[in-house]
Amino acid sequence: MTLKSDTLKLSPLLAQFLYLNKELNLNGIGRFRMESIPEQTDNAERSLKSEPAGSIHFQYDSSVKEDEKLVEYISEQTGKMKSLASSDLDSYLELARQFLNIGKPFLIEGVGTLSKNKSEKLDFTPGHFINERMKENSHEETDQVATTEESFTDYEEMLSPQKTHVPVSRKIVLFLAIIAGIGLAIWGGYFIYKKTNTTETQKEKEPATLLVADSSNYPEPDSSIIERNSSASTGSYYKFVIEKADSSRAFTRFRDLKNYGLDIMIETNDSVTYKLFFKLAASPADTARIRDSLNVWYSTRSKTSIEN
Image 1 (spheres, one colour):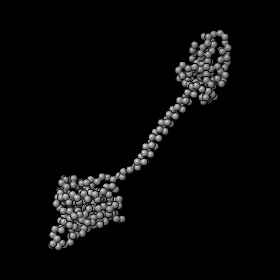
Image 2 (cartoon, one colour; image 1 turned 120 degrees about the vertical axis):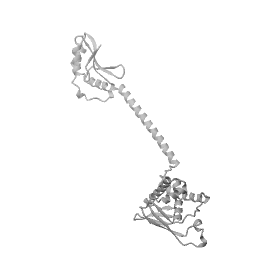
Image 3 (cartoon, rainbow, N blue to C red; image 1 turned 45 degrees about the vertical axis):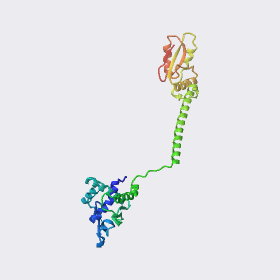
């Protein structure tokens, strides 16, 4: 919360108003009254030059409304419109209520100190009246207003959010920790990237190290088809492609069929798609029959195709 200087200047104005009118009504807080003691005839100028001979009394009354005479007096003294003077007064009194609600005493310069007691009512301790001349724009008035503003420094610090001052050494340690964290993250990402690439390369170069798929899902191979046709001495050779797959799937399937003792073969043109095929000798009339048989026994994902 930031305190405006115009709001701070109200404190001496309230004291002056109380001295001149012997009564000060603050809305939501209560009434202040000054009881004068008869003065000596030789102290005729005392009322304007020194502390008045009298005492200040306070009556708590939260139902007190805004005093039009007080607003008019503030307007005259500050040169502001009445609406602005009223707004400044409301801000000042709101500040007072905030302090009182959190259990802090609130000082009205030249009047006294207010504090909230256990019964949620306000107690008042009279203070020393500010020695101000009624002459406007005097040098003496300027000095006293400045003093009044300085007296509110503690209030402003208590209501304003406190800025945390981080030591320089701690900032340096924090900066180094952030740099180290970023470096570790980059190194970790690079390490994972290299490890992934190395694993993929090994999969391509060493198919035997790949995980073995569950061969129980595959049908029992009919090796007789392969044996009959591989022993044939007549006819041309055809590629009977039973499956096209990526490297992982292709090498796993290749090893499974090899384990059955089949003469399965594998090839690729782009290192992306691999062909699993049998190269068999057959006459053109037998290719359809062989293809259908291989399709039943070995093609689990696509139909067997024939290539020359």
